[in-house]
Length: 461
Image (cartoon, rainbow, N blue to C red; front, side):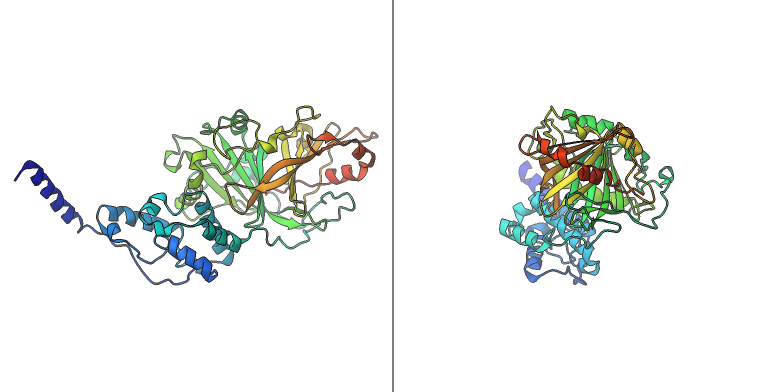
């Protein structure tokens, strides 16, 4: 027997012995499958159930060790994150959220796993099937029922009305908020960070401000985000949506704060980021144990090419790659009297009839008057020198998240400069192509000034 033959025989013997090392992949009947129409379930059954169900579906080549070990690992990991055999036992909102995440994974090419589709082409989701899943979910088909507590009428001005709430709890002490279960500390400084984007989530009827600390903000403005530098911090602050009697959608009850903290060495096991989420008015850490972070890294896996960041920062910097930054929403003319995108954010709202979103910014003097953690939220008494800017964009679909919309092209920018007592406040409006100044708006500026100054801050816990 030649040396080559002996080696081949030895390999076959070892391979045969390895077949005996076969830990099980548990299989059991479905106990409560996801609640969805038959057409939707058929797509999920064919494309997702091989890994994301309690069924055991292996092709003959999946059964051969060592490939079997990899398949088993993938199946058990997939079940732990999403199991369609038991998803139906969860509340309807949780089922819908799981389906939205699944659709986003499909849209971004993360699921089904590309290597799985190569060997199992029948699992591929076709464009028509993806469209069927999206049509079933139908974000924005319903808006939260209103009116919001305390919402008034905007009259003929079309401006948003203040939204207040009575009987809310006193603010929590942010320095006493407990760390996340993975050890990440809460950062009270997030209140002073600047906004890099906003999101209107039609999948769960929430608004989000995405705030960035100075390191992250400077990196975004310079286009230094591939990857984001160590020390970058993001806070994603979420509120429920509430409809006012003016027909506009405003921030309602506070939902949560999520943090991402970049340190490539310290968080090397979690994709270079520390992750945390604090929910409710008492800012309770999320999850039942430190393994909650797997949910975070798994959700952000489709945007690993963007350093695991879903947000398209509003910046004029040009970054290589498709849909990495939001340049259109940053294209303010240089000759405006102020550049408000560098200011702090006070609140936001959406005009669903006109598919527009607006953010109210304030200069440093205005932001010092803002008390977003006032237990009885109301519009601040802005001192002389305060400048507010209501920036309105057309909305566009978020390319990174089905069911979300982000700022697109500019519609208008309105400035209110607060004068000293006894003098008239100044109002200027810039709108249309190129944001030219609308001189005629100044003649009827009184109601508009009052409407903008009356907007209360989006409430923080």
